[in-house]
Length: 114
Length: 115
Image (cartoon, rainbow over all chains, first blue to last red; front, side, top):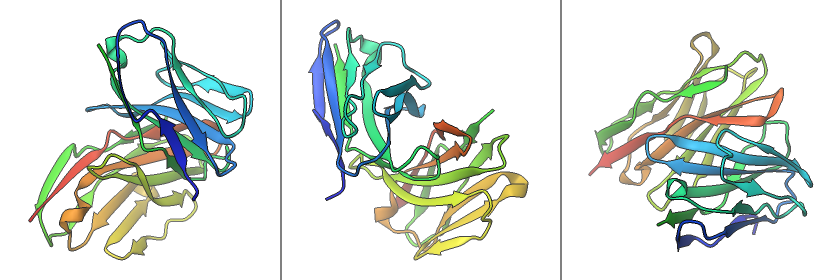
């Protein structure tokens, strides 16, 4: 089944404790992206990747890191999480980088930073 | 500047009524793509439709229809004979062909269908 998976789905952590949210897609998609969703703010792009070893900042990259060592995986790293990073996170992938293809979203990761 | 505005934050209608969700966009590109996504209470994001800037034909899919008007930079979504299962947050999104990296989402409209 074609899908985007994220792990964990739920995470409660404390300020400063490094964490990684994994994202994997099995559709051989070139484009992958991370978003955070906050009430009243909609979806905001954190980082995106147009292919292996090609990543760039979105609108709200501060406090996050990503890597794209393999085409299928695009982990999101919070080196020192803070309470303002409490949010619902979505990973997405798209067939190409042309902008014309829809994105497939993972199920979301709800992160709480205490 | 690239921007998507969904002015309706929240809408409530009674089941079987028709409802239209508004989406207004801004772009300087002549080639761009518009999308609608649905986020039901379970939280996942579901793709509904894609439209490119050269195709202004309206589209109908069952009870769903979309009205794309370049003259007013709008891409509105209508649900006919609404059902409780239509209750969700709906997002409109825009991507520009020349800017592969940028996909901008509106802030979403929360739709409540009351039984």
